[in-house]
Length: 103
Image 1 (cartoon, rainbow, N blue to C red):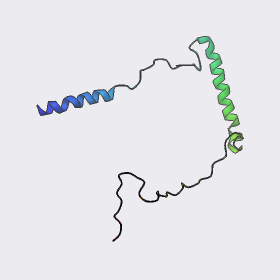
Image 2 (cartoon, helix red, strand yellow):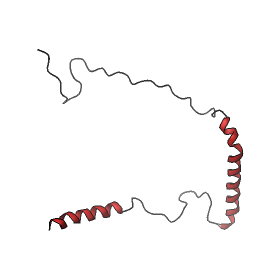
Image 3 (tube, rainbow, N blue to C red):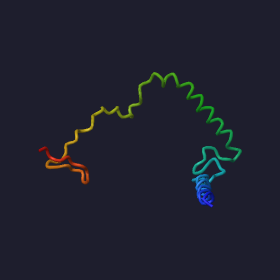
Image 4 (tube, one colour):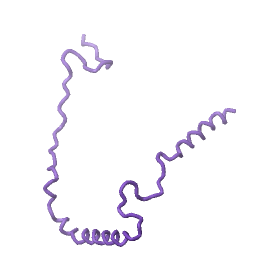
């Protein structure tokens, strides 16, 4: 009896954990397809992939030694966090332990 009372919620929890969190989609495109499933557009998609890959390979040595583009923001200097100053006259955190005054 005790084992069934423990096993039933455990099986239920395992079943809920195995459920998918989102619905499955059988299509590889959702909002805007990079290449449509229409067969007459496939040569253009293949040509675009070939040209894009060739451009990446040819320009890789130049991009490796080039400075970053002008529109990247410069790195921000690191400033440490300002020091914490408690409020005058007591501890500002409610419910925290305040040591007793010295005798």
